[in-house]
Image (cartoon, rainbow, N blue to C red; front, side, top):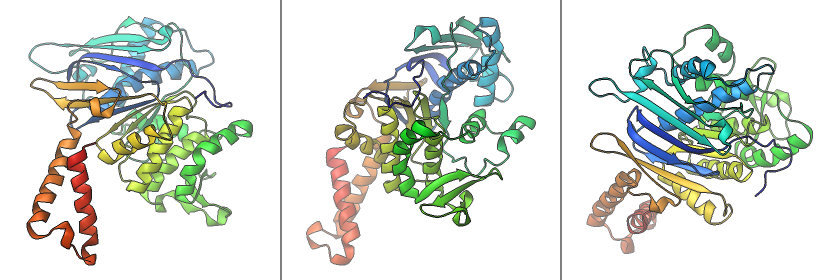
Length: 395
């Protein structure tokens, strides 16, 4: 579908990321879809790192592109600015080189990012001994103006009051994605035709939380119930955490940060959400994709994966998709990728859930049969049926 009128066209879509000797990855190449991209894997396999690395490069590009008198891209400038952003986002303890994959002797990390417009592509490298500079192998010829968006697993609306000036004045043990996203959350909201377009995207989210999110002059966010005035505002800290994550996404749409042809990186969007809200988040993510945004999420939720499958087969048919499964190999993390989730081999994420279903069936079958379950055991019967479906049907 075309990008809705009222949203600016972006300048680049992330096409591929190639790394060598980067954290847990010895060598890997990820080829991204223009729409939905899902990175799946167990904890500790580097899912978040694969979000933060391209985000960092895109954020540096956009930060300079938004400056009126921003200099043209040069290797000399990027050498220190990119290294500084990498350090602030990844928070290595003492030097940038700690992001290089560790083994005996020295090693060199190499990163190559390709975008839909070749003039914005970037390649760089650094050695394990480097402290605060990278070597630029290929620099972009132009800056981008569209900022990427990074949503951590934790919601940020409650920490927003005073966070940005505090972060910039003191050393906080929080990575810079929190500061970047807070800046976007505090941006002015759209108006006119732009606002009407944004309202169509965020209305389903606001219906789920029962109101709209407002930023008052005291620098705090509130939930204002539909049809009520300021006197009915509820402090965002009193709102359920799952709702706060939904509210954060709605706010970014209201300010025009999304979709705006921007790339949204979201780490575990399902965290602290019940199944009903996960369905709404999945729908919101695909709505952003259909409106021209690129979304890259990291997850280990079978429910979220299945919801994507259902929506992509019906309401959002035509949205490009790509899946990446991470697994620990003998020496480094390995990546399998495909355009269909069922074609990703092996989908390690599901192993434990399938084993749990098998254990449940085995234990339940010892004492009961689905034919003799009483009305009082209905919840067990439905769970037993779901477990059977999981084991027999897979994803």
